[in-house]
Length: 91
Image 1 (tube, rainbow, N blue to C red):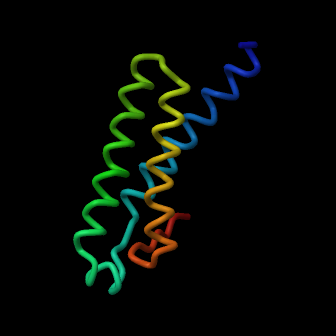
Image 2: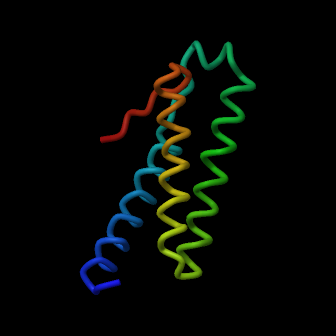
């Protein structure tokens, strides 16, 4: 991997880490989400687990798997937003 590609990977991984952390911190459960507690709990558990996995891989220097984990975690949040159980208000 070239130095430029490696730098791009590091930057993208850090950006997705920040995005997922921010989404988890700023997430609000909607009224629909209140009515779907089991689904909300599962989506939050999955997003949080992928965040922790991403942090673990990043600390081990495994930037590819860190990025994959942060991206998958963000996907769970996005799916919850699209389903209408979450709102995320991030500046």
